[in-house]
Image 1: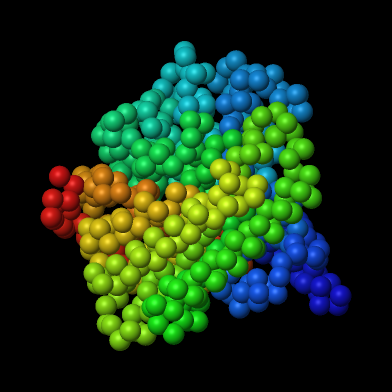
Image 2: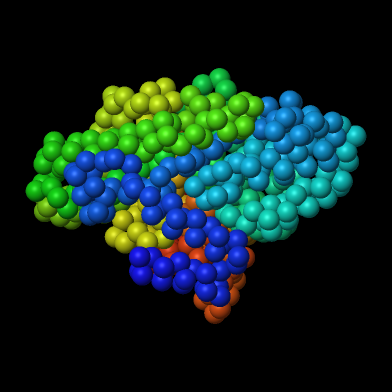
Length: 511
């Protein structure tokens, strides 16, 4: 207990933490004093060795990791629990949502999804002029960033082009905040090139939004639909993710004697342990936590049967390169056809096993494969299936190397393309790159443009100016600045190579 008390005391007396941040860290320590869900020795060993990771979800899951409400239910019916009538005006709709967000839990203690904001607000915009709409959204955006200061909080727009979606892009580009995170759901049949161009111009300004491949995502879900939440996670609307457990492919590959041993023995063994860990955490949440008696469930914002389990992986690049070394092959992941084929073979093996394995309590009875974005303390393990920072090829080669993987990760896969700031003089080049990447099979197009203050870390964002201030005084009003500072120190995110888009039409690309 003396060690525990000292840890609690260090949180309480930390001058860099706000009172709210102290309360959050104290609650995490309290939860982790409880026993872990029952797991066998082999699973516990894999966790202790870092082959498996539960992403600090806590020892006693009492809420899903990611909750994805259908806020249209709230706006249609109001809320008996919150004593809210259905809104009739734009101001009432915005206020209703602002109240609701405070009651939506997640692993961050803040909502990770605040709605398909254009679909939600558009019915209330009749009679509201464009300038008035932007003014109201500007106030809403400031509220989000100041009251819910977490860059995992995510809003969606699209796929239809509409005045709210355009106003959101304008306001987001103007304010350049880390919150909310933003994704355009893009469908070439319904969105139109003008909306995509508006989005890529916004990326040049503030490295937002993500651009999601709406037809590809739609095919992975049902008629009720999906949302992009947190970083770039695609999850069932009116549900979410009960848990996200991830497998460090690099650590697993270190335990193989050669490529055949990895494929035949090591990978299946650790996937089996990962499923057992998922089942243990799902079982506690669904059978012991009482979460599903919560009003957001009973009022229909979410449905108990629409929570999936995310089967995450990371460290693909290092795993492939390690296996290449074992076989005496020099080719590196992302740069060599043989290495890329090995990586894609691992992805296909993962996808086949996940599809074939039943998971109790999970939506559709299965987990969903996810290329996990990494965390700030990952060492020698590049996020998901990405190419290691500092070794990225030109953007077209980069896209073509990774596009085949995207088909197999329905709950999310992303690459961050770091583009040289000379693109500001040729913004159409980024539009063409985005359009080509999505046509090539990317589920999500994401870019940082060098020279700006806003920078993507994994899928969330930080401001370099906040990072510098944090390094000086150890504090920040935003919850994710500390994570970004740690990632900058340990995982080389600031060493990404800015690339010039000079071959966007190579081999017919983007035609």
